[in-house]
Image (tube, one colour):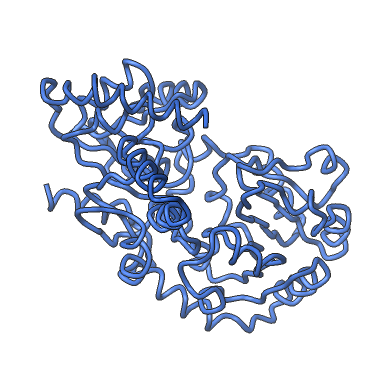
Length: 410
């Protein structure tokens, strides 16, 4: 309730004060701002667009990463890259003056920012191919459960806060994903199928060495990965999505951390665990683990994915990206029926779009990992089938394709 009141007040501020200013303040031709989620954390598609643009074009001109994260702002400024405040008068001024904003979540709308961007082109990268129902689909589901008056109030609130405002461009990874998923979940004028910037780092070794790439990553994990490679260990990443109660699989008892650590020791496997940022990792219990390492939940995992030999997930979109590496995926879906019925549900047929074994228990999970990591891979053709549905471009260079598209449609 408190957040709804705050969002409403900020939206009113935007409509009353910032919206009129967009008719008075001229926009700078060629200027571009990048806005990431959670106050401008340096991760996901926003980060990789910013780095990819500089990597592809050297001096990227009037490009500014807007963030309220002090360490990120300092690191980018020290490296002489364009960076500025996201919130407050300085942030609003950047938004009032820019010609284009590149975003990857709904956070660009908050704090009245949507109003300050009237007249600028907005490019929505989003942050993953949606296996789950998102945005418009979930909003319609919520509204359907309200009274007639409640539905009116719900949609008025959504319109006031610009939650479903039409963007100029909604980026997708394939025509199939655009047609079957994105067009159901967003409003956009154009739908470029250019691929995700965050996937370029999976396919370009030189890009992975870019000096900005380490910002926003977990450096302890980097050291653990390097040590594991030196010891000849296999590396497995477990990356589940969140539930509505935000509880993690260790808290509810479906995974035993000590047993997972023993499994890693017995099979020469380092298990990286990256819980969703809305979950709290059991760090105290992990202190005694030798073969399990928790990745900071709000850090960028993508620079490490090329080092990963196998992925464990449930319903997270990260597995779609991992298909580009053509390595085994195991789906630990211990609560599939409940998630499908009571949580967010799916956009696609789950079995058709998840090319890997589905397991319900830790014993089954560990057995499938042993099989996958030993080279017995019976899912390779299925992974290729789904990959070719989800990605029209398999060679990287998503940022260059997107910029070429944007420049043609000025």
